[in-house]
Length: 477
Ligand code: 4AD
Ligand code: MG
Image (cartoon, rainbow, N blue to C red; front, side, top):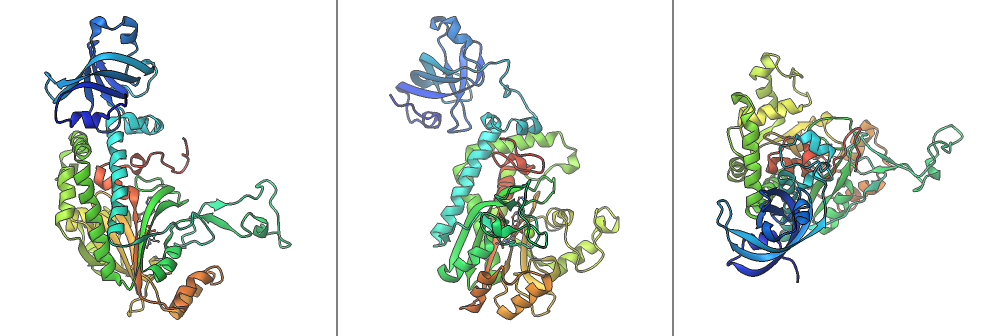
């Protein structure tokens, strides 16, 4: 007999004579009631054990965390809180769980404790919900682009290029680190390395993605991305997943439209498919908020926040306008910001981004036309000669969630920019070819997938929305 998923049983149209389920015991009350979960839904199914006719030895082995298989009938529940329960006729312990040692006790654990047990935390309600939401969100990403005729491109994980020019790369090498081959000048001889050159893990698939957009028209990537930035924040991972669409003939306005439509679509899709999980996460957040001082509590519940993003256009604001707002803002004047905004040209920190979104505009914001010298080399220079057609999307509670731009499509301007920044033309000969053969206006952006999952789940630390986080000093599991 094949076993049935708990989700299916809870949604059953009728009671059933013969059911078979497998799952893990969440709790076992009064030697009688098992709350069983199999991961198919946040909801447990109550299984009523006939304790008088079950051997004492078996009853003892029904402990939190144990894997069990049971047969019985699906009946209407007499208890409150659930429509159905299972009257158990036979029960088999598949895998014991020592109740003294199992770390995931049915009580509240701190997120820090759960992070240290990332292999087991997924057995909790919250992490089960987060990981199901994450899965549905990633499917929604594909669904959106596939419906629109975008081609999914797998850009390389190992590359010689530093797309962002920020130098935050993990090197990939098979050279013996304790005995490195040297050139005559004493430099490391990368010609002897596996690829015959210096290589690293990708920080972005954009540059390779652009070459595909210049043939296939509309493409997107969705893959792991690596950054060796030593920023121990609740928004940064050393390994994260990024979605990067790139579209030929799109200018910056089209790019903003695409990003906004895309984000709204995937949130809507996930709200439709994950109602139970999101309701649970909303409740979790409300509980958490209670321990915060009134002033720091969110004005909206999780679902209200998600609906707000669906129902309101993102506010489009130029960098120059944003600097004016920030310069005249109370926290700037009262020196409450860690980095005081003195003048045009300043790079915006997360505190500034969050002020704009959370305090000033109170909605998602798209900032555009940034100073050229604080952005990457590939962005389209504006006619003013000092700003580029960049855009960052800022979200409440998150800060930057998207970074993108219209690309510099003019060969001469691009080469000139690379010279100024000291980017090796020979290294990027293939990228420059896109500008030499049939160049055209094009645009794209990168969405940090975990930051999106943070927003949708209402979690506050990025380490809690990826299965096994990689951060400075942490690569356990
Ligand atoms: O703004 P970024 O650096 O842009 C790019 O990489 C461009 N090549 C994208 C493009 O135009 N195709 O990164 C894009 C997004 C950020 O807005 C942020 O959401 C996320 O990637 N991100 C990170 N997420 C988690 N941990 C990190 N260390 C991140 N760095 C960037
Ligand atoms: Mg950025």
